[in-house]
Image (tube, rainbow, N blue to C red):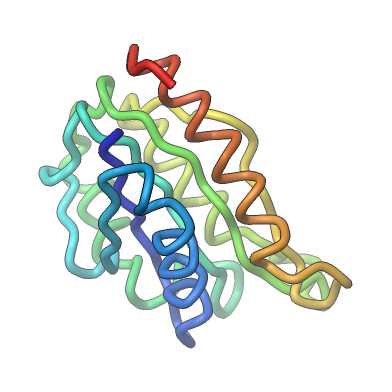
Length: 155
């Protein structure tokens, strides 16, 4: 299956996790990984599955590298009705009023343009006991299986 991992990051944590996910699944799938800052909504193709890995920055905002993509979605309102995605959020519950709002905003922007979200949005908590990778790998396996079904690709 064709998978693109798109990450939005401020400090590099989302990028590192995205690269770990790529390494885990590239033997079985055609996987590439890129920064949302280098991605246009027009680049999103219906024959790929998109794993979004995004942090939160500031007052619940998208991180710097995801802001241009978010602005492009808001301005262009592209038809993404054939695009499937899943999203993994990174945050810190010490900031409970804005915890994981960046990924939530990104998911809302995608679905507002018609994109189809598969599986739940996972919200990793940097103040919690779990490592991001320990949550991300089972999540990625599950949503990839959902995507194979949704895109009609045999497992």
